[in-house]
Picture (tube, rainbow, N blue to C red):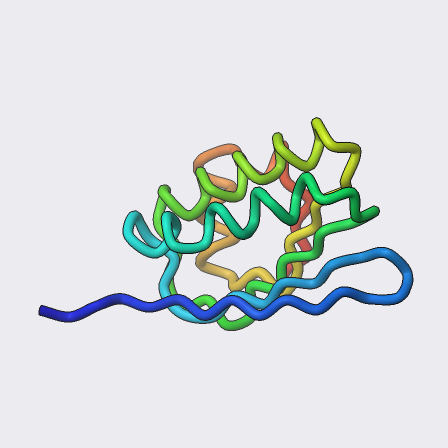
Length: 108
């Protein structure tokens, strides 16, 4: 049995922003591994939450749904969410699903 892993690194900047770098595959199994951490950061009072997706090698609809849930949590808390270095295939999936109308994406 193979265990799918995702790596999450967090850095709090002096300007009040939090930057989270994700690496690996973001799917049904790994989205659950990082959801509690991301939703906690989304409502922790930081000015901005920046998700760096440059290390994401795969993202399915469960990952995109996670980003939408984090966005809603951020919006409720008054925190701005930005997704940066979004890989082209992930950005395309977000466009197909309409998530790009809600999420602030910066392509890789």
